[in-house]
Length: 128
Image (tube, rainbow, N blue to C red):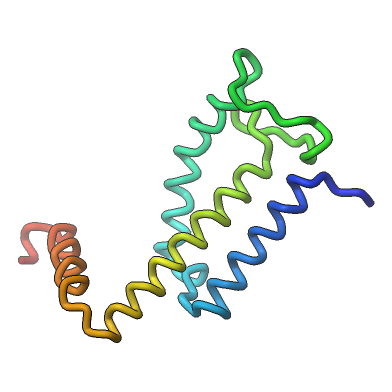
């Protein structure tokens, strides 16, 4: 079976991102509910942006039919776009979390203060 290249690269990117999250950086984001909520939110917006970029009329981004599976969803977007988006988001958040952990171990007071401030701003007013 000869798989299209965009499909192959998307599956590899997804697998690599999960492997890095679980074994290399050990952030284990894919095991948390917050990560999956983030995926749902970003996918919602990706549907509209991707749909606009790949729409049938006035296409901005055009994929050759031989590079993807040919399955198009949500306004004509190749299904692989969503897998690639997943991989990019997971890898970015995993690296971010790993760097945050490293700063905490080093005693990066400024970084800790900034996270505390952001957390405090996110708390409901009645809990302060």
